[in-house]
Image 1 (tube, rainbow, N blue to C red):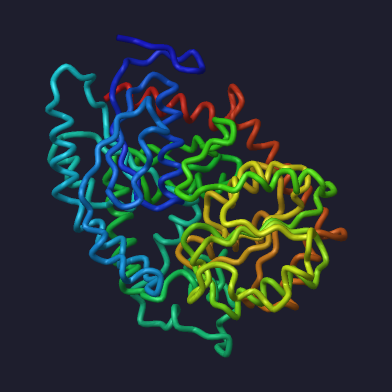
Image 2 (spheres, rainbow, N blue to C red):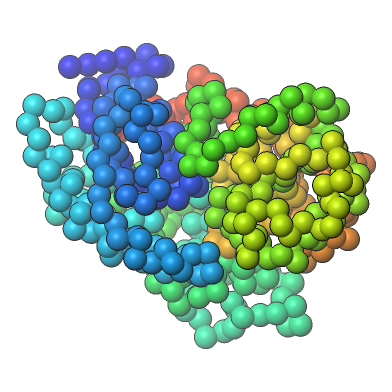
Length: 460
């Protein structure tokens, strides 16, 4: 049986099994990838954990299979414990048997299309051994930048040098890291509060990426050309850069949080490129004092702003209780606060002038795709790496180097929103936006990479 894909590519009708990590920043690109592959004629089955499970009714063209993850056993440690390695290690140990059983059952089903391969999030490193045992090719989806993986591959997580324990008082704090000079020591400090655990995790993940049948990246060649050229030296498996995934569909979403769409009538009233959009993602937490500094910084600038404050984001607070006294009265109609926003559409709105972000990779890509310069406040793992690329390599944003201080916040907003420097950032990110569109167009780098991936999977 054969079917024509959306670009006229003829592929054999085979089934692909996908296995996303159950966090917003990982579920979204995996679902987007599933949709992309479905349009090219593949049947899609998604194995998912009970924790943060997707809503099958939103994707009637996919088959969903739920597996036990025992994540409820450790959720009492959220949000106080931000050692992500703890949760990732748990998932890699608790999902082994249920994933193996589910995958084996799917392979044994009669009358169904043959399974070509399994695509798992790279963080599920245990899945390589399972796939090998079942003699099924495993392709990994890495939901970060290539630069992040290259940095992880060389950072000295096990070093006895106090790389991860430096403070502002140390002379090396502002200096480049010898192993990866794009980063500064103060960026490395933010990546993890548990270098031993992070070292164990990255070692497992990277070794199993190298053992896989291929790597899919949610990036595009023109953004990370140098990194892509050096990648094969350490990762000698096929790589496919077919991103940005979300651009294949109009405002596609797999949000686990209800989005507030009432904001658009307010945005429509704001001048072009005047609004500061603030969102720190679906996982990071902020202290009460940091929250108040953000509020004062936005208040003092006098610009219109849209602020997405996730319930529970402020430690010890349910939602807005920690705002400065009379803050809402002072800002009035100049500011809008929502619990969650349809981010892709907000960034695409003509009124949006800059994006104050935690620099998760999805958010960073979405900002690039819409030509919106960034203010960067990274928390952990890949975010400090993404932020350093935004500020120092691509030069399309400003990094808040010293955390949340209202004076620094005001200076950063001013740098991005006004003057020659801000216009230069806008020009550079507009150029990248144009390169995104060219990469996705027929004959472009992402277009060709997707075709190569389709052919590769069809060959199994």
